[in-house]
Image (cartoon, rainbow, N blue to C red):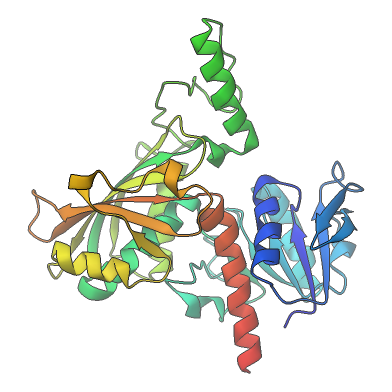
Length: 337
């Protein structure tokens, strides 16, 4: 057990969910510390019936901390993770800064738990859009080896934080009232609109968000032969990312087999009855830790192709839940020694 744990970015949107999950899942610890920026330091947090004062994120804050779970912007993670490592603290990091570092394992516990145990003080949690996709890919890859993935994402405004969710409401209201819209969180109006760009231009016409899905998928599966063609789109939905995923496998996987494989995979819930109008939708998946799969069907254009629809709460499994599950992996591994 890690006797002393810390939540870095404890007052943020994901940090709040991490706190809730630690309480709900009865995560073991003797002492807990909540860290945030100087702006939030000094405020109080209620956790498991006790009042805690938020401390400022400084190097000394990690003295005597055994495990830290961080959800911060990349520049903050770049700075604080070395502080923690120097003091012997293990970090589970939610930011994008350390994900592609060769010395840092990139982990989804249902997919590659063994990677977490080979850490050198830091374990990274993937991008939210990658996490739900690789979880859905895992049983198919094990059964038939995936050669290629074509994915289109429909990403909620919560992916841009609280400001993104607020802008969806504000811009929708302004649009309906015939008032001008001021775009702050997004480059274009998100109300009644789709924005086919998330992140900056990165490589050959692909954005940084899209290239994350390519590189992170290959790293998680330790297989650079898996080809990924992503298109990432911001949509006017408050929470939960949706993805249309097409996979091509070396061995043909039938729809009934795929449905059985999905249903048997921890962390996946199958909702797939087209005739009854039953399939995953963001409004039904909000607040759930599972990754939902439906609309499972053969690809009509490829002999060994399978396509399906995938929805997951990007603030939970796409972020907070995955990080907490990684921490639980470490606790379980330590207990087994």
